[in-house]
Every structure is written in structure tokens, then in C-alpha cells.
Length: 206
Image (cartoon, rainbow, N blue to C red; front, top):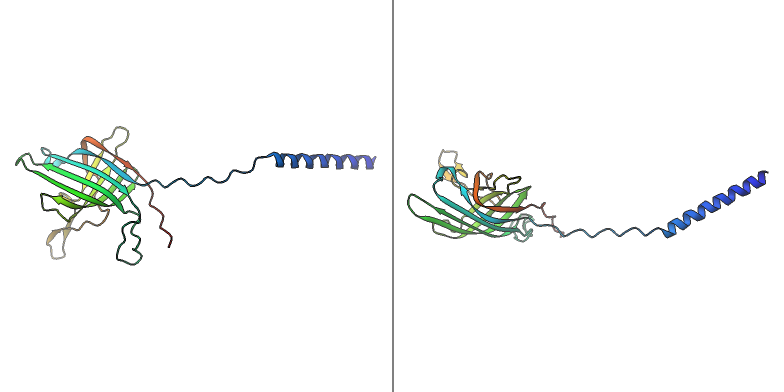
């Protein structure tokens, strides 16, 4: 009786092992890991008229076409030979029609820096042509892409911001560093902007 029970147990064990082996052999091989998707790059595109509360009667317009180009602008500083993750390219145009005088101030600038966080972006651009003496000046602009019906917004580094008070009390206009701009403090009343956010690009390998 014991021998018969032992034989039956061995047969059952062998059958189970054979079944497991069959299932393993029939199971599909694990799928190879998917190749990482191409990194999305940050961008800002669009144009609009803003309401600036201290010149509400004037017509002030911005257009922005900016795209991130990480690590493309070498800097003459230690570890700056590859540039910065916020390097960018593109163009900004600004026009300001002064209702009282009938004069329209204009400027065009080349984008050199762009960084995003959610639906908000800050960027800087160096003025290439203007009729207000801004040639060679870096300006900062912020853009908020409104959601759920909220209006888009724009901020800029002149007018109410970027005042540098010296220790002796004298006041000068501060220098705008790359990607430095105030919060978007004005509302876009006509037109709009699209902000495509993206994380900072990984540092390139040596």
C-alpha cells in the first residue's frame, strides 16, 4: 500500500513538473523595453494685445516664437563650454502705440533663453532693431497660457520692474540676466499664446 501511494505521488509530481515546463515553454518571451520617447522641447508661440493698467488707452502688442535648444550656446566660464539647458532661439516683436502722441515704438529681438513651469514660461531676448534706443538690450518676458477659460497673461522687464537701487541711494535700470522676467502681470485682451512645457534637458555627457 505504501509503495502504491509513493508511486502515485511520484506520478503526480512528474505530471505537474511537465505541465509547468509546457506552460513556460509556451509563454511568450518578455517584450523588450520600449525605446525612450524623444524628449519634448519647451516652446512658446503666439501673439496678442495686452491691457497695461498704466497705459490703458494705448495699443501694446507682443508676438513670441521661441523654442528651446538646450546646450547650444557655449559660455566662456568653467563648465560652460556646452552652454545651458535653457538655451533657446526665436524672435520677439513688440509694438506700443501711444495714443496721446500718435507715436508707435517698436522692437525686434532674438531669443536666447527659455524655461517653463507648467503653463508659464519666462524667456529673454536681445534687441536687434528698434526705434526707441533699445538695440543690444536684453529684455525679459513672461507668458502664462490661461486654462479653463482664464485669459492668457504677459509680463515684461520694464515699466514697473527691474529697478536697481544702489547703496548710495541712486537708482538705475537693472541688467536683465538670461531667462529673468517678472510674473505675468498683464492680461491679454486679444489673441493668445501657447506654452508647451518641458523639463530641463539632461546634461550632455563629456
